[in-house]
Length: 306
Image (cartoon, rainbow, N blue to C red; front, side, top):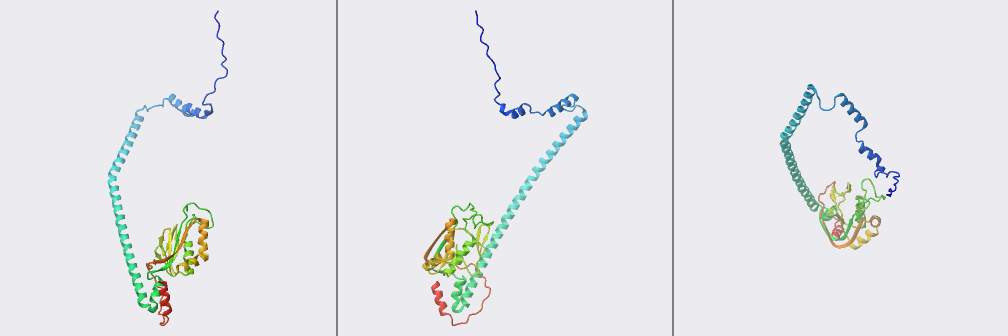
């Protein structure tokens, strides 16, 4: 007698794998909104679905297509005709920019030559009409180059000076506390003058009594000339005494604080011989003759300075 196979209980249906994505599934299964489907069915029932059937509608559609084709054709033709003109105008503009740049460079070169000529004439006038103190006046005013013992001070930004630290040095102009500022260089220069320096230059830029150290954005300007780090400061004077006096001064301690707190790199060393160039341009504000007879001490001073 054959035996019936046992009946298996189906139980509850297995859940769909995409049951957790019901919203996405509904969007995929019913991509057409019910309102649009209803409107399409109504138009089809009224006989307005598909292409236009009346002659007027067909002519209107054909005219619209012809007009669109004419507009596109005219636009393409105009663009093709105007392309060479635009390219020619662009080349002419580039040539004009190049010519104006060359003219500006030539004028700048002439200005530099005239400035150097004026400076040389002023230096000669100081040396010729300065009497016994002519050389000393030329030296102190920066009108002549000077060479002698002194110190070399190098000040440089921190190795990682791109991250602002929010310290007391931070301002709208300098967000990097590891950057050397114009006021830092001002204190360094003033400290060297106070410590006994007789002549100072920064990155080859000779300082005079009228020199100004300012900031323009992230750059430091010395007499309106931009300098880039590292800043090498050369000072003429008694090297060992000048270095010791600067280290013990308030400005030397200020430089030490910058190194300890903001990782600004510095190095100070006495040199047996440093050479400072003459100032590139001098502006004589006023001058008056000095009575003769007081030149012996000044001559000794000038000899020691050089």
